[in-house]
Structure formats: C-alpha cells, structure tokens
Length: 561
Image (tube, rainbow, N blue to C red; front, side, top):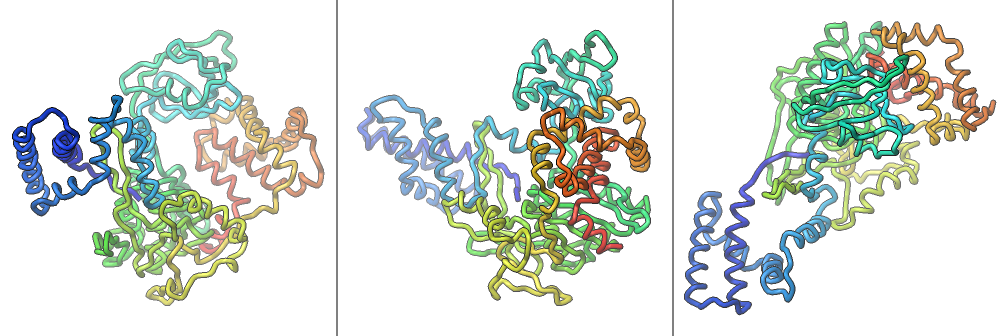
C-alpha cells in the first residue's frame, strides 16, 4: 500500500550536511581557524533553527540528530578526509539499500533509473504507440491495437509484424522484450517510423506513428458473465490512480445491462493506492460503516475512514475472489466488505500485507518507499503476516511454505491463535495476523496436469498454436464483436482442438490418449481463451472462455445463482 508525498529532503539535507561538514572539517584538521569554524557553525545552526520553525520541530531537534548521527558523520569524513577521492553519492547508492534491508520487507529504496518502472503501473498511463504485441518467436507481432490510439490512427492493424522502428531492426535479432519496448516507447509527440510486414501484402509497408499518452487500464475485463442470473464480472489487476473511476464506470455499465450481482476478481492483485481501495469499498457499503483505519508509530491512530452512503452498489450482492497473491489494497477492500457482512470472500488466503508505504523523492530522482503505518480492517484485524526484520528472504518464501504445508489444498493446515479471532456484526468469525481467510475455500486444482499438458505449456506450443491460428483466421476474427459470435465461431470449427494435437506432434510432442483425456478440458479452454483474447473482445473473451475450468469463479457463480 503506497501513499505518495514529497518532503523537504533537499533543503534539510543541505543544511545538515553543511553543519556536519563544518564539524568534520574542524575535527579532521582541515585548514580552517577556530574563529572561521565557529562563524560557519553559527550560520548553519541558524539555518537549521529556521528550518525547525518551518517544519514545526522542537528547537535543537535537528542539530541533536546531526551531532548524534554516526552514519552521517562517517560518510562526510570518508568524503572529505579519505586518502583517495570518494563520492558520497556512490557510497549512498550502496549503503542505503543495505540499511533498508534491515527494516520490514516492504520498505524499499528505488534507484533513479528504476523509479519510472516502479511508478508506471500505478500512474494510469505511459507514452507510446499503443499496441499489444508478442515477440515469443523473435518476431514482433501486433496482437491488438489500442482503440483510438496512435497506431490505430496511423493504420497499424492486428496481425502486422513490426520489423523496424526508426531504422532499428527489432525482429529476427533476438532482441530482449524490454529493449523492444524501449524502442517503441518515447515522449508523446515524437514520431516512431515503423517498417511493417502485413499478411497478403508482398512489400513491407511504412507508417509514421506519433506517440501519445496510452492508458494503463486496471479494469481489464467487465462483462455479463451470466445474463440470465443477472451476474456481472469485473477483473481488477491493480489499484492505480484511475482504478476507482474505472470500477465505477464498469459497475454503471453492467447495471445498465441488467446486473444485480457482481463478482470482483482480485486474484493476483498486489495492491496500489490506499485512497482507491477506500473509494471502491465505499461503493458497496451503507452509510457510516468503517472501511479501514491506520496506526503509526506507538500505535497512534492516523486515519479512520467511514463510508459516506453514496455508493452506487450498496444494493448489489457481491463476491470477492482472492488468492495467495492478493495483497494490500485488495485485502482492504475484501476486509471492509467481509467485516461489514456486505460480501462473500471466495478463494484462498490472501498474501497478508498490512503495511502502508509513503514514497519520498530524493533530489537526484531516486525514491524511498518507507513503511509509515499499519492498516486495520473494521473489526480491528491487522492483516500483516509476521516477519523478522532483516530476514526478507524467509518472508517471501512464505508462499512456498504454504504450498509445502498443503494450505493450497485444504484449510485444515491453517491454525490461528484465539487472540487473532474477531467477530463481525452478524456473528461471522474472522481472523487477523496473516491475510484474509475466505468465507468459502477453493483448493488449487492440479487434477488436470499431465506430462503432455506440461510439455506443450512449458515449450509454449499451445500458446504458439493460438497465435498461428489467429494469423490464419485474422479476417474472420476481426469481424467478431460479441461473445455469442465468438462462441458460434468456435462451434463452427470442428477441427480446432484436433488440429492442435497434430500441430503439437509436428513440434515434437506426440499425443498420449490417457494424458489428453486428463487435460482435455483445460487444453480446450486455454486454446479458446487465448484466441478470443486476440480479438476486439480482448480480456472479456479470455475470462469468459477460461471460466469453465476456473474452479474459484465457478464457486462464485454457484454462490450468486
């Protein structure tokens, strides 16, 4: 969970370093008389006192911090007095990560060159050309273009192969995906000249695509998964700056299509912005229901947020889907609905991240995400699972330990102390101390796994078949605009699945009757889901066609029907 906030780091650091530098210079025997030293020390002290007043700090607090800060004094002494020149900046880049590693597992230092990659998924947009592509066969193939985006405006179509970007060859040269993305992206307003190979066109084509802002949508899918039962489905991948707006729009559209019940899929959603989680939970809660509260150092309460009664979905029956990768903001939403008896949680125990991070920017463009608070669900649960400071490896191995302890397959292996037991207003028992435990547990299904399925999956043969199939049927697939049309298309192709077995055999994986019988359902569902995702229907079609083998989603449908 992250809260972004800028501080006076640069101003404070300059004054503190100047003060310590003066002190270190005096102690270290630098050519400076006592009178000059006292004058400089006095000047820096006055600046610090002025800063203390500005920041509302007690008199002398910052000066005492400096004089008692062995780390800061050591860095300055190294920079000024070490026998060889040494940069304090280069020392900081090594020392700061080591310091942060001694804290909790979610505080982290982000170097300048990595800040953009860290922040981008939550910022709701990036600058680029607006295509979804795949390069698994060393060819950059456009799977879809962003509607009304730069590439669509320039004439790029799904199925096109991008050979070059501004005279840089990106296909057939085994270029890593991150380098491909770097070539395609760039500041909005700049031009990406693309050399493209299009099916049924003999000569390469050239397009000038003017880069622009490309939305990063956190709601990848929202559709009526069962119109007869009036059930809508929303998949939320993260809690970005635009997530509440996207979820609200999805709810309104689904209600307009007749939805009275909702499934919200938060599986593998690792979280994001606290305010977005609060706003989304508010949509489902009656007035004056506690959503979340946070506590800081010494357990002092920092935030207590109640629902305002203006939510648009307070009358809808809701199911939340969770798994072991659902964390932070996902757990806030799930906990708020569970503790207020407003929703049913289905799936497996969530990750267990109950810490709030604040992002602080340094003057050089690097950043520190520092844990500043813990959040609690309405009944008082802290969802953060236990951790040992400085032992981050063991913390992140917890998911593996859950698997080894059979927790993915049965709840019998999960035990909580009575002190972690809480009760909701309607008497439902819930537990703190390590994630959200679902109201209805769904075990991880491995019954479909066979040697044949493993082979075609690991070697990427199944996915490659869907790409090749899409290429051969691109013209027909581009005409499909509804899920019912997609269903009819698959029904008309009687050889869709049998042709896959032939395709896999040509790739070196011979069919095995017993294995195919075991894995047939998942193979068929994945083939249809991957092909359908490459149409205008995108992720709506993917989740629709993967649903038959999704046990957690099926459990949610049974709950709401």
